Length: 105
Figure (cartoon, one colour):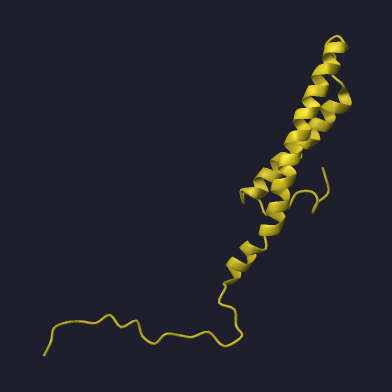
C-alpha cells in the first residue's frame, strides 16, 4: 500500500459547443475598449486646443491691459470639466461616458 496522495481535480467540464468561454465581466470590460480609444484620442486633441486657447488668451491679455476674454475663460472651464469627466472614465473611476455619448454640461 502506498501513502502517496493524489490531488485529483475531478472531471474537467468542457463548454458546450457554440457557447462563449468569456465571462460576462470580461465582455463588459471589452465593451469599454472602443469608447476608451475615442476618448483618449479626443483628450489628446483637447490638450492641443487648450494649449492654443491659453496662448490666445495670453495675447488677448497682453493687448487688452491684462483683461482676459470671458468667452475663452468660459470655454476653458467647460473643457476642463470635460477633461475631468473623461479622465474618470478612462481610469474606470466612473462608468459614465463623457461627450460624445453624453451631453456636455
